[in-house]
Figure 1 (cartoon, rainbow, N blue to C red):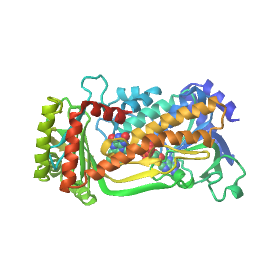
Figure 2: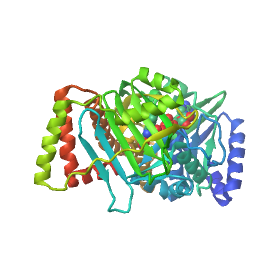
Figure 3: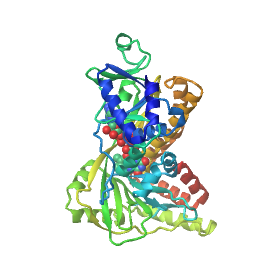
Figure 4: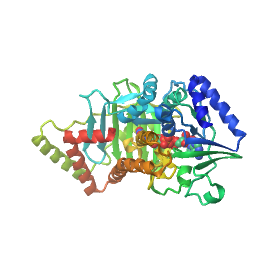
Length: 472
Ligand SMILES: Cc1cc2nc3c(=O)[nH]c(=O)nc-3n(C[C@H](O)[C@H](O)[C@H](O)COP(=O)(O)OP(=O)(O)OC[C@H]3O[C@@H](n4cnc5c(N)ncnc54)[C@H](O)[C@@H]3O)c2cc1C
């Protein structure tokens, strides 16, 4: 039945296909259960892009794919005049994935801002590092609003050649997972995962993909354990107005002992703020009158209160030495733009934690995105890792289809887990290490990190390697 419906869907134009989906979903409500090849739980940026990647792959033309999203359908996305306060720095490889199903081109038609230089410096010393690809055509990253990313993906998903049964305002009440759920043998002799939607409704699926964010119900049902800790830090975000229109393509990040403050370019006149600080300070920043908030942002970028004289002296001497060995090798510090306003109601706060699932898969279950890993935003890697999961899982499932294997078989799911953990774990560990290294004003550590940063800043080849790694 699933096969014939898919073929019927494929013969229709996208608009009629959506109508058929609705009809099919409604028809299925009278049945107690329904079958799918893949159910994706969670239609955020990562889950929706997984659905899109499958919907544009020839390998899945005759497969039945269901996307469950708890939130209501927002319909076709219309770009608002005001910038959203939620943004992500997207890497070139993410742009490649989104382009593979046309979502990157949609983003470019709406709005995105390239980052051509990134300057990171320490408030405790004069040490800094700058990355740029000025000689190359490709930017280091693009700053894009989360709503624009999701709007672009959903637009492409609705036009996809392979039909996806998108069910908004729908979340699984529970899952019966073979060999995991205690009640599996009593409740179901079925070898697939049972997704219970409440009432009499359920879906049996060969593969359940958990893309339901950091509090993933799929992860909990599959009993996939996590390593996690709370950073006791909160990220304050806001949209900021700059003093004057500039060629705004630099990402500025200053490490303060309370956490990093980042200013990310949105347009000639606006930048996006991600300011990590203590939960108490975050509460205070949210309550400040607009003018005082703007003063606090400028002060955080310019003040010299944290300066450590010993670290400064060490950096000074070391920089001179490096300049003698490699004249002109060290990138010079530039000054960040001055902020003059904060967009009304654009301030918001997000508590930060590290979370990594020890395993991403079980038989018939795979986790992607924040359901598998959540990290500190200081390096802007979270959703990029999620998009990397999508790319990898799609390729592996395509190989499974080509080889005639069962989509939920642990054999190829383990290949996905190994590949992604090899890539994701070093990123998670490095970002956590950086967060710890910079969360102290203990003099020996300040001196050591300042000398390290100064040395790396003078090694162009090493910096290029870091760029390659961060943008992959
Ligand atoms: C301040 C801040 C700045 C950041 N900056 C960057 C950056 O610059 N670059 C970067 O790469 N990353 C960044 N990130 C990380 C990035 O925002 C996340 O990695 C990303 O949002 C995760 O997307 P996701 O789709 O995996 O999860 P989510 O965005 O959490 O989406 C999960 C979806 O699942 C749905 N859902 C949940 N439960 C169910 C259920 N039971 N059934 C059905 N649906 C369900 C939810 O409604 C939601 O739509 C930042 C994060 C923060 C907090």
